[in-house]
Length: 621
Ligand code: AHR
Image (cartoon, rainbow, N blue to C red):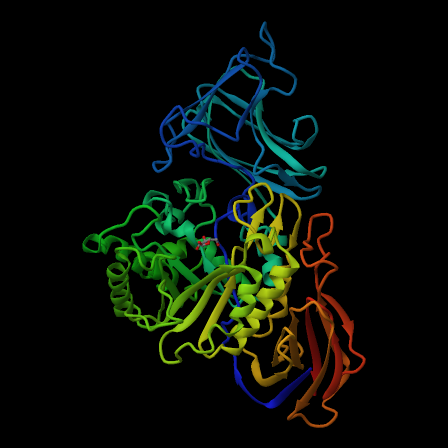
């Protein structure tokens, strides 16, 4: 087999080609990248009516020492439920409280990760009929070992009305399965609301879990599509993500029960998504609800409040401080506009009764007010032209490995005249994928090479879904698996690292000469490292067959000796078995293996292992 690369002929790949799609699914955000440790911090998850289920809060003590109930006495108008704790025992007398006191605890999202030496900020709102002496503690999952503790002591007059209390807890030990306890040994009635515990050490200080966001940063995403997915639509419109409910002081956000079948308090809201995009150096791609959920739809004749909501959302992101919504963003700590350039009108709604009508209302209003904003339609324009105006169209594909591999040419024949393609969700799913197999990843790598080659019409692409909390696997596979304290990339995650330098690179003309039974797909790019300005010629090849392939690579269009032996490397992704996956025990079982290249040059004989992805990175002068 032969591969010819012409280093003097090519075209520039869009700067935006490879990004990420963050959606709230599998507890990706709540209990995932968002650092909040308390699950159901405002006691609203059981619904707005009382008595309300306070799950996963639990009670420390028995019925003779305390009763716990909910009422609607909160000082926060948009989330009225508060927790009322009547303590019947005391530190002395005939009903003495158990050692350590009685109260409530929250186990977070399947355990809180508390690490020795780190500081956690606990904020809560409290009210009482008398004086209070409450211990705020981080403990192990049984409450036996205390990792950090502090007391909130106040006189009756100080807590007669709702009062904000704040403590900093420095952990004296590490436990990945900890809980937060609020306990007392003093008889009385206490109300709690909006109890938050956040680590002080978060990504760029903005509330995100460091290690998870670092994994995103490591693949250099050029955009981040958010916040869903189905999460944007909602099973019913009442479950949809509506941005105005997710901004402002966290205590005042109502939270919502998403289509994902769990409660989100929306601490990770619209502002935080925009902040995350900025922190990652990625362009935000905001998907908003267009009046359509999975089950119900707003008629086009009454869609204008949704249109106004979208316009206001754009103003919130990019309006100046003098504008109504821009001033609210500024008050939240970001006076400079966010670089919002892309919005998507809904998610997977094309074909639904009101999509076309609603879409046009959004399109016209946004183009009128913000002519530079690029608008993404849900209707697939890859095979036939759209019957409505758009800058981009969404293309989603979840399929078997063989199917995705064969889609390497999917966009070869797509019209070059219409809107550009945004492959905003792609993945191998089903039995080929399991919870993240090598087989799935290789098919995806081939598909991405196809996208690189068609990047004159495909301008953006992102894998889906991005995250899964191992205790809430609602969708398989996913790119990054995590629990409270650890994380690893599936092979599909690692494939994305092979493509992280493609955006903005130059795609070179390359031709494979292979027989029909050889399943090779290849591309070549030249990219420049922005840190040291070095140039690399990168050749990526997927061998999707079960045989080892000997390949002769010939590169023309470069000066003699311009390829440097030293500094040139080969990176391989393969494994003993096609269905091999990574796990917490073996997080790098299927991960990139880098070695030095000892035959770097314009003519190279290389060996491609069966079922492998290989990248040859040639340092050029
Ligand atoms: O990525 C998982 C889901 O797949 C997304 O929420 C939705 O857009 C698609 O159906």
